[in-house]
Length: 216
Image: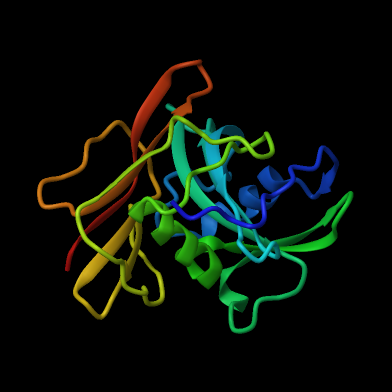
């Protein structure tokens, strides 16, 4: 397993606007958003982090629950945090925020950030470990992965549909991120996956797939 020379430090500080505030405005613009016209009411439900080997990009895989409807809906939202705009990624910008320690940060939909995609592939392959969302230098033991191949290819631009996001590779492989979460096992024919757990607002603990790798 590859050991990153850089371990992210989780700063206990203020962020304005908050991540949930950014997502409250951004989620209704996504085709996989299942809430109503009044907008979501979000609470943190879980997630994990990955470390950037270069120490430049923050990577967080958030799970948020929307309580605005008749039943809570959990969403999987990979985000990257950068100290400067990412060239060519204007459409992937979730918003900007002021970090109490790091200053201005640009938050992006991580499915369009090459740093996150490279490290997520390393996670699927088993070359890196998922890190705790809130505690520095701590492995998240609840995140599991599997992969039956050798080396993952590079993925192309992400495309959203009504339930998730797909990234295709020239080698005929598709990585699907399950944006709307629920209990599930890896489907037949899958060649890799990442799974984890989250907690719904009423305290129910659920476990399911965050991403599935399959032939195109």
